[in-house]
Length: 362
Image 1 (cartoon, rainbow, N blue to C red):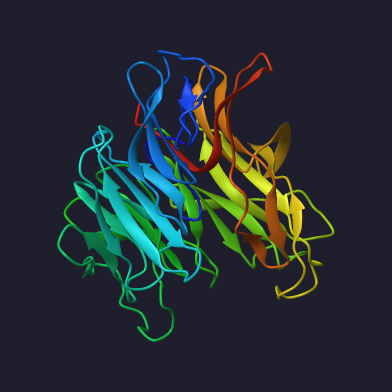
Image 2 (tube, rainbow, N blue to C red):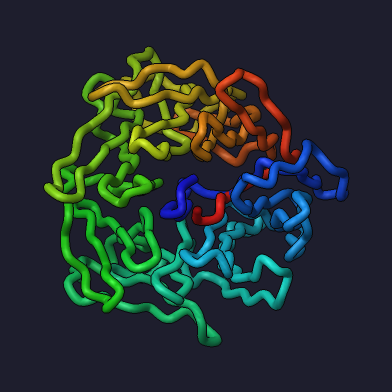
């Protein structure tokens, strides 16, 4: 995951090319001093790689809660994560320090889907139409950026989604438009989506010139599936990158860029037919495959992973493990293993029981 990633959905998280501890403190892997810091959420704690190459606990994850995404601040001095309570579906935003200092937490007034930083502020979606939630006071503050349309407040409990950010700018989306919110709080449209489906799971390229996001309902021969749009932010032009054709809908579990600006995506098959509208149905276990963008299509890399982050130098951090999928998409899935893959084809397990990870800005 690049310095600019948030995690939506969906999705996002931490890495380390160093020794790692699982939730019982058992070391996994060997230290690598050239690796950036990483944050890792396991089933019962949030961990950060320390200067010695190991992982130290910065916060506990309460029983019945699960961290689904992690994000670093632009200066790598703070972390924020989004947790969901399994028994109720409640969502909570938590802010912490990588040195293990005090944490702060806020319950989302409505279900939040993504968390990030905008300047010094922790922000999330999940507010009323046309607003972004800002955290810092006792309760989340719904902020309506100038230039962001109010929309129909009663139409959708979360009509604005957070896609990505790079510290100063925050990218959010409605069903028709992707907006950039600058440091002064002013929003301006940068891309017309051409669809009524709200984009999600965004990522910025390291140089900030491209934005990739996931959207559903746009695959002509498989309307139940998803696709990825890569946007040139200078022109606002979006290029659909078609998923490999299949007899079943395919879902995107993550999208990211390497240092050269090439997009990657993790893609998994659903259980329902392409012709059927998403509906409740039996679930199955499946593995997501990693694909590399090649123009307007994807080429398989041969790797199996549900999330990824590029480290440069031929190194990639991948969150591996089976997913639980249904006809309507990916459901809550078992924790996975965080692995480091390099150009030689060797994989090193960094941490187990991982639910989310995020790489610190480089």
